[in-house]
Structures are given as C-alpha cells and as structure tokens.
Length: 142
Image (cartoon, rainbow, N blue to C red; front, side, top):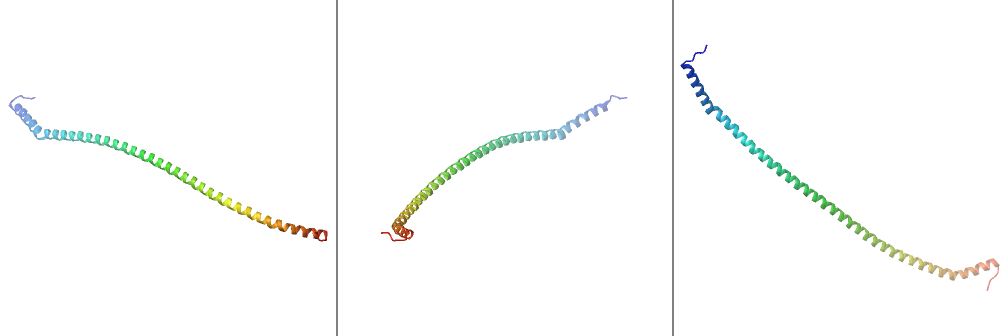
C-alpha cells in the first residue's frame, strides 16, 4: 500500500525540478528549432509562390513574344512572296516584250525574204512558163 510521508513530497519536488530542467534544457530549444524551421518553411513557401507567379509572367511574356515573332515571320514571308510574284510578273512581261519584238523582227525578215523570193520567181516564172510552153507545144512562142 502507498504511504504518504515526506518522501512523497521529495519525489514530487524531484519531479517538478526535473520537469523544469527538462523544459529549460530540452523542450524549449526543441520548440524553438521547430518554430524557426516552420518560419523558414513559411518564408520559403512565400518565395516559391512569388517565383511561380514570376515564372507565369515570364512564360506569358515569352508566349506573347513568340506569337509576335510568328506573326512577323508570316507577314515577312507573305511580303517576300508578293515581291517574288511581282518580280516574276515583271520578268515574264519583259521576256514577253522581248519575244514579241524578236517575233516581229523575224516575221518582218521572213516577209521580206518571201517578197524577194516572189520577185525573183515572178521574173523567172515568165521565162519558165515560156520554156515549159515551148517544150509542151514543141515550138517556140513569140
């Protein structure tokens, strides 16, 4: 059975002193370290949130710049395509004019050659006709 005597008070005092000393030496430093770590974690979580927002802003900016660059590239490509088409049309027009001029020159030359040949043949045609008639008739025509 339990006797209540002066040792109970000594044990109680010993327990209270031990709790006080453990609180001073062990529990307070551990609670302080835990509190500091929680404060640091909260600070780091805030930093992470700020960096995440910053990242979103940067990604949005990069997307906008990429879209603008694509738009600019497409407009540049379209402009160069139009310039190429205009240069092609201009070159084709120039070549067509040169071909038409050459064609006209060749056609004029051919007409001139045909006219000369007709002239030469018409002068000789009379002689040929007379020679042919003479051979067919067997006598000379006057």
